[in-house]
Length: 162
Image (spheres, rainbow, N blue to C red):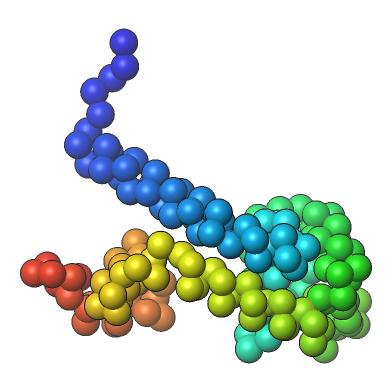
């Protein structure tokens, strides 16, 4: 016989299930773009991380962000190089460190991936105020210190996020 669940635990479980469903729905909506680009979900995650506007990431940092073994990143880097999307270069501060950098083709593929994901996600069905509210709630849940002020100023319905 199963134990009775705390009502808050049940809501937490329901929210987690919805987050997984959201990710699954987004993945299903961009499957054609992944196929067009020749990317698996793992390769798409790596391309997503390689933001040309962000800091360069070492292979070890990529492994940490993807929560995988560095040997898996080596495999992903090999495949991205074969596709012409990325190249390994020596790190600026330490030539022993290898960073993965998107090529021009890789940057175009990343733009296509980001565009598809952001336009086709179920979140795109929310209006701007709803998206700001969801963003603030997720920032609060994750505890991102640099965005807490934004989360405090956003109001979702009648309940301010404090």
